[in-house]
Image (cartoon, rainbow, N blue to C red; front, side):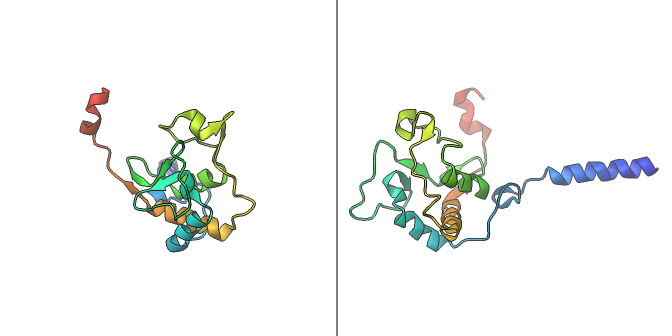
Length: 152
């Protein structure tokens, strides 16, 4: 009986550890809650729209968007973009390069062409920026019928 209780506790604990709460998951590195409106201002301040695009946002007058790069941020995805994923993409853009783009347009010698803002962006700006970016992603359910033509 003693071993049965211990086994149940171990199984329950393992199950709870494996649970994922989606974008708000405490797994990984997290910072305090940011301000999405301030994050939009950070995006504009650091001229991110020169190489990125977000639906509904136009680059400020005078800022020319680089059509060779133009990496999309936000949109509808079937996979959760967690706070930790987005944070890592900002502070270490070479960690995971964007899919679907010509490699020579987004990287050089295996290193992302994205400017490193780690020495100029404050932690508050980073928190606000990531909060803004996360608010631009929409999780859509994976539907098998949408992928039938790929042979899945």
